[in-house]
Length: 511
Ligand SMILES: Nc1nc2c(ncn2[C@@H]2O[C@H](COP(=O)(O)OP(=O)(O)O)[C@@H](O)[C@H]2O)c(=O)[nH]1
Ligand SMILES: [Mg+2]
Image (tube, rainbow, N blue to C red):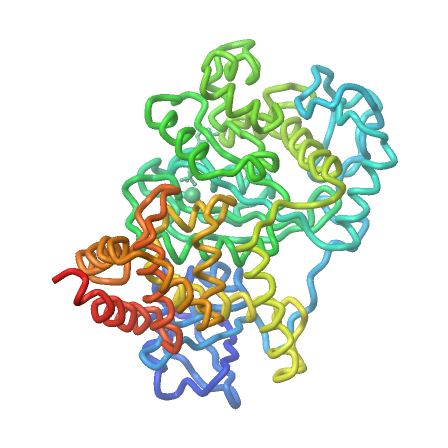
């Protein structure tokens, strides 16, 4: 009988997989984990190289989108590099001048320093770098040479890193696909299902390699801590050493109490520093009243206009469904908005002399990624720089997942956006046991009891409650749990060890 599994993927593993073939096959069969689907058994090709066939081409392509997969096994994670053939992968880059996503020539016009759209219109193409002389003019308000030099910098020094944030159903994944001009991101067609994993893709666009990181709804109230924590950590490693821009995404037609809550949470979690790197982006632009521009819509809501103000007035509007084929010289066109978006981002970066948003947590993440990169390069000299980085990121993700067991996601979000000094202390303390002891000595017993009770009630070493509020007990719970989790090989083992340590530490205090 003809085999229905026809689409091969080659796997290179950091260790033999003979004993765990079934488990690895199961990983690739589960879309939520690997992006894959129905697939046949694992067959060995040569030492540590295997082949697996998928039934559907789409599943094969999904799996190939990430070059590195990490499969959690009972005795620890195993790293698997995937490729479409036995040939080593070619390095990616943004070097071909005729690349389809090459930018249109920059508009050379000075003026006000507003990052908002100007009224003029013209042609700008995602496909071709040509544009009419009368094309859309965006006041980036700076010397054209300085502006060009930022884009040149991006070209030579590396990629733009952009994170999409917002409530589930706000249109983040569709927006990411609109920005890249192809369906790279897993998007859902019902507003309620939603992305549960962080997905990162890189493409050459507007003159530079651009990494977009799509996130699950970090600000949703329904997601569990355990579901969100790994994804926040993944987001940290994917945009390390820090993003050039946060795109905060809202649904224009549905700015209700719930959206208001998201604005409140954003203001609660973000430091002002982070907001200075943010752009507010609306989707479902078709629902804007006729003739209305987004600035007017924003002005009608006090809290929203305060938020936009804090973001330097940067706001744009797309419609991922209805504005793809509208002429690029119209305001209600994704191409028009896309050019405005990249000019806004590049201007924002140029205004900050090429810098991106970072904080102590990002810096720690980057330091650890680089340390792993050095180690991996020394051990496996035949990997490309992209592969080395991917492996290093996967290792750091796993380390942080283990070490941050016990830290609530509210605290992690605060850390991400620059508000959680205590989390930074926890991260740093883990590497320095004497500092842990000093911290513990400083915490009054009453605080410890609070942390301990929370820890016991939730079953693991949870000590920090949601929001940017940190009790001393919380930090102590986190530090104790994290220190205990240090030698663990898997997140589960880390949770168990942390729970045991916190229970023991607080036994007397909570009697
Ligand atoms: N009409 C319209 N529908 C959109 C737009 N953006 C997203 N959608 C729909 O909104 C729902 C949620 O989109 P999705 O990108 O998955 O949201 P996410 O959870 O924020 O990633 C899906 O049903 C999309 O088809 C848009 O700009 N216009
Ligand atoms: Mg999504």
